[in-house]
Image 1 (cartoon, rainbow, N blue to C red):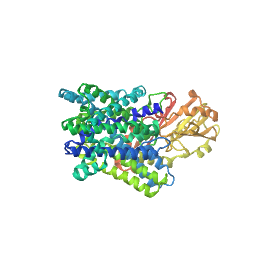
Image 2: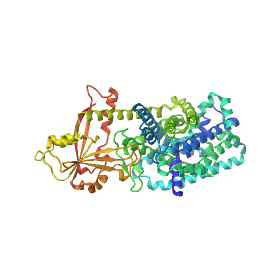
Image 3: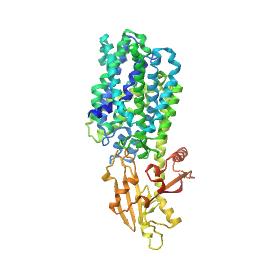
Image 4: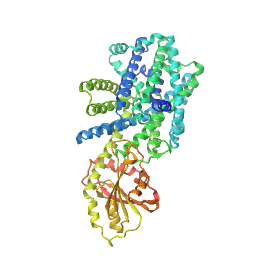
Length: 616
C-alpha cells in the first residue's frame, strides 16, 4: 500500500497540486473585477474550500470512484460501463456513446491547456525576483515544454519513480508555507464557514458568478482521480487525498488569503510571496518541476485515452509503442505527442501569460465533469439501484454545482474559452464521423460478403493449390469470408493447408484474461474460425496470442505462418452512406489510419496486404 500511495501522489495529484500557483491570483483579476478587501478574500477562500469539498471530496472521491469498469476509470471506461447494459435501446446506447465521446473530446482540450498554464505560472515566479526576467518567461517555458514532449518516446518509467517523492516535498512545502502565514493571521480561518461563501454570493451577485470561473482553477485535475484509478486503486488515491493533498491545498490557499489580508500588494503572485526572499529561486525551480509532473500526467492520460478510443472503434488505428517491458500502462503514441506539442506551444506563444491562459481554462474541465455526473447518475439509478429520492438529492446537487461552474466558465468564451471548445468540437466531429462511417462500411461489406458455409461447400480436392503452412486472414465479421481471402482465391487459386479466419473483438471492458482471450472453432477442410478478444486497455498482439493455439489443433509456426490483411481505400459514392461533409472527413481520416499489421503486432516479413476500393 505504501509504494502505491506514494506513486498515486506523484501521478494523480500533479494537476490539482499546482493549482495554488495561479488560482487565488486569478480570482482577483481584472476579468472578475473583485478587489482584495478582507470580506472578498474570506468569501473567495470559502468558495474554494467548498468547491474542493463538494466537487472533489464528495463527488469524485466518495461517489464517482465507485463507478469502476473492472477497476478502470475515466470517461470512456464509464461510457463503456453504462452502454454495456442489455436493456438499453439503440437510441439510448447511442446517446450515452455521444456523451462519452464529448467527454473525451473535452478532455483533450484540458490536455493542451494544463501544460501551458502550469509551466508558464511556475516560470513567472522569476518575475518576483526581478522584472528583468520578464522577456525570458515565454522562451524558457517553451524550452521546458519542448524538452518534456521530446523525451516522451523514451518512456516515463525511470522518471516516474521520482514523481512521488518530489510531490511529497511539494505538498509538504505547500502546507508549511501556508501554516506559517495562518499562524500570523488566524482570523483567515473564518472562511471555513460556508456562510462566508453565501454572503459573498449575495453581496456581489453577477460578479460572484463570474468568480466561479476562477474558482474552477482550484479543482482542475479532479478528473484525474477517477481516470487514474485503474493504475493505483481507489484506496491509495483516497488515503492520499484525505491525509495529505486536501489539507495541504486548503492550508496553502488560506495562507495566501492570510497574506493578502495584511498585504494586498502581494496579489501579483501571492503563492511566491509566501516564501522568504532567500527561498524564492529554489521555490521557482521546485514549482517548475511540479508543473512538469502535472503536465506529464495529462500527456500520459492523452496517450491512454487515444488507446482506449482506438480499440473502442472511435478513432482510426494509431501507432502505439510500449516503452516499458514491465509496466502495462507505459505507452507512447507519436501522433498524439507531436500534435499536443504543437498545440501547447501555440497556446503559450499566443496567450503569453498564465493570466491570459486562465481565461481559456475551465470550460473543458467543467464540461467533462458535467458529463461524468450524468453518466454516473444513469449507473446509480439503473445498475446500483439507488433509491430515486436519494439519487435525485445527491446527483441533483452535483448537477447544480457542475452546471453553475460550467455556466460561469462560458463567460470566458470570448477571452479564450473558445479555444478548448473549438478543439473539442473538431475532435468530437472526427470521432462521431469515424464511428458512423465504420458502422456504415461494415454494413455494406456484410451485404456483399460470402458466408463461410458457402466457402466450405465450394472447396473440393484438386481444384485449388493448397500449400503447407498456416494462412491467417483477418476479418471484421466472424460469419463471413474476408475479402482478402476471396481475392487470393480469385486471382491465385490458392488455399493454404490450414486457414484461420481471425476476428478481433473489443468488449466493453478494460481487460480480458488470457484464459478468455481466444475462441476456436474447427470448421473442417483445414479451415478454423478464431476470435481474439481484447479489452480497451489491453495491448493487441496477435502472433503472441495465436501461438498457444498449437495445443488446440492449429499448427502455428512463426516462419510458416502468413498474415493476409485487407487494406481498404475509400472513395466517394454517387449514393453516399454519410452526409457529404462527413463522407469527405471519413475518407481523410482513413488515409491517416496506421496499418493493421503494425497495430496488431504482425511480423512485417510475414504480412501480405490485399487492397480493395469501397464506395462510401
